[in-house]
Length: 338
Ligand SMILES: [Fe+2]
Image (tube, rainbow, N blue to C red; front, top):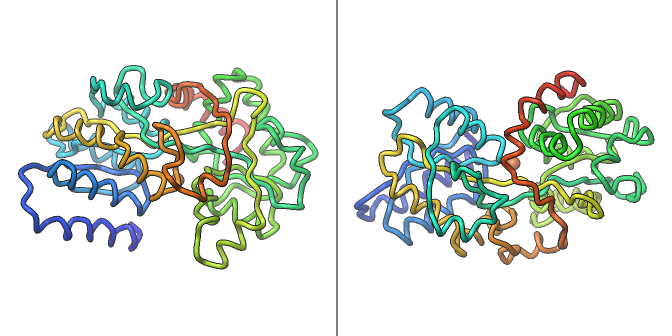
C-alpha cells in the first residue's frame, strides 16, 4: 500500500475512533484513490456508522473474501471497473440489493441488471495525442488506432489490464468478435514499444515524445491538468484529449462501483453506505476527490473536469464488459497484446 494512502486511511480511523459508534461496517476496497477518505468520513458523519477500510488490489480483495467464506467480516466491496464487479459476482461473492434510492439515483445502464452491484462514478476511456505529433483528424474514433498510418506511433497499457479488457468487451458487443479482434491486432501492429506501465505512464510517454497517441481514463489526465506541480502541468500542456466516436456510438464509459458482500454481517449498514454513495454529497466527492464524473450527472463542481467539455457517452449497459471479458482476454492473448 502506498504511504500516502495508508496515512489517509489511518488518519480517517484515528480521527473518528474517539467518537462513540454504535455500529460499524467493514469495507474492502480495490480502489486506489486517496480522495476516497472523504466518502468514509462523510458517511460516518451522516449516519454515525463507523467505516473500517481494508485496501488492496481488486483481485486480492476478492481472493480474501472468497477465502474467508461465510465467516468474512466484509460488508461492502468497492472497486474500479465494471469488469471487476462482474468478476466478484461470478465468484458468488455478492448479494442483490433492492433499493428504490439506488434505482432512482443511478441510471439503469450503470448498474447490474440483477442488482448485484451499482456504479457510483463514471470515467471515460479516451484517445490522447501528443500535440503537434499527429493530425487530430486521424484519430477521432477507436477504429482509427488500428490505421496503418499510425505504425510505430501508439503506446498502450497491457492487454490484461482491466480497463483495456472492458473496452475490448464493449467493442465486441458493438462490432462483433471478428472486427474487434482485427482492431486489436491492428493496434498491436502500431505499437511504438511493448505495453508497460499504467494510464499515467501512457500520458507521460506522449509528453516525452515516445509515441503520438494512446488511450487513458479521463481522471488521470485531469490529475495532471489540476496539479500544482510544474512538471505535471508541463505534461498536461503537451497532451490533448479526444473523446472518440462522437458521431457514432459514443465514447466508452466505465464505472467505479460497489456491492453488498454475500455474507455481510451488517447488511443494513452496507445498504445505507451504498445509498450514501448515491447522495449529492458523495457524488460530488467522487468528482473533487478523484476527478471522476458523478454517475447521477454533472461534474460535481470540479472545474478541471468540466474543462474537458461535454461528450456523448456510449449508452451500452456496463454489465456487457464483464460478460465479454473472457472473450476479450482470449483476443488479447491471440493478437499478442501483452
Ligand atoms: Fe485507475
